Image (cartoon, rainbow, N blue to C red; front, side, top):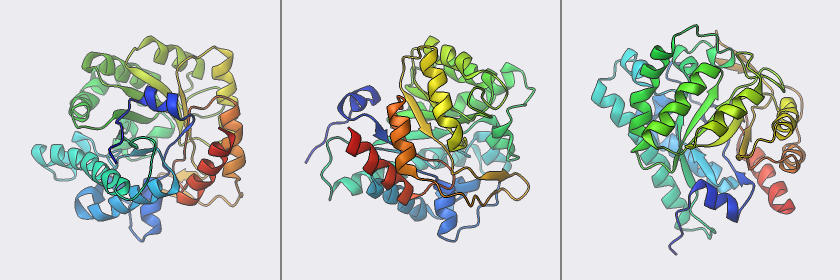
Length: 314
């Protein structure tokens, strides 16, 4: 059966909320991979692409409508520092998209779906390149020019990669979000920006989320505002804040499991609290979330729980 390839907006019109996948790196760590590396899960794009593919497939089987590529940590400066040539770096970034697309096609060969699951090309923030937890602080103290130089070539490459849209993730800095919004409009790439937040009112650098909402609404090619790798307890408050300011574009929520990140070990500290992902997803759905998934330490079982609850309420 040939399924339609829909835009993000068309997919939302057919099925809202959409289900996003969960944490990639923590899934891979659960399969025995040691990712205490500046490239994190991006190292496996070259070294073990079949493991990246297994993660994508597990999330599609769990019910995801959107899968994120493994390119979050793959930037030109980061790959060059790791010994990749310029050409190798380009090829690796494109390979991350190709892996996700091939898994989607394989999955569809044996499943009945209403539409083609979507592939979002993941773009990590400058803080991901630093590999010191800066994506949870955003205190770069860098001029706009440096952030633009860091992002532009990768952004342009992924815009032509065949991914359905771009996902700038865990953005902790308002200035960085401004740069990304400008590039999305200039290049003409459908993009969502997802922020890391320190609480239910502010992103990681202290900027009020309402200012971020105004920024996203001001850029035509920014299709949605997301919140990711933020504690689940903050999500309802953020959704309420966005509703209070009349934010009109889709909202994406994919929090982590409430764990604390240790930048020295590059690992998540255990969170012993038991979270009811179905109940939380139902709450976020009622508060207006258009896409719901998970981030670090959220795996296929949690995505299935989200899917089951969301579809029960549609």
